[in-house]
Length: 84
Image (tube, rainbow, N blue to C red; front, side):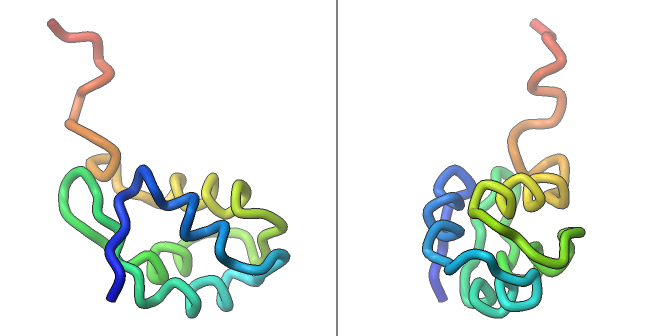
């Protein structure tokens, strides 16, 4: 199983052939563990949770992926609240 940091996910997505269906992308990425700021997740499972049936580009899939990530996946809670 391959492990990829969230900051490097675009490389994994760019390896797919586009256009690609959500189901096919999920199968292709099922052996990739995405390392998040607070834990990890199966990249294929996250892709399954996205809302489009088909993706025309890696950028489009990446945008949809960020919409289904848990809030704590991208950094510390309240990090951008301007506290300090």
